[in-house]
Image (spheres, helix red, strand yellow):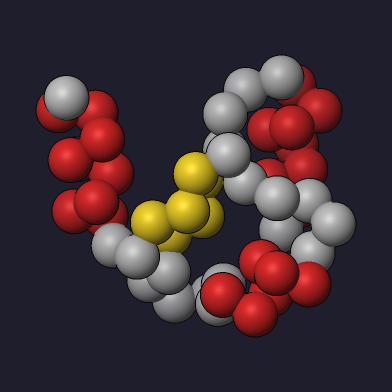
Length: 50
């Protein structure tokens, strides 16, 4: 979650993608919340394509 904290401190949007290291329970338990949460990398493409 240190990358999320770094992004938040820098004032940029952050994202968590559930492809390995992080799971939904860890996101819920963390005091640092990402701007966006994705189940897959494909979901990111859908957001930026719009």
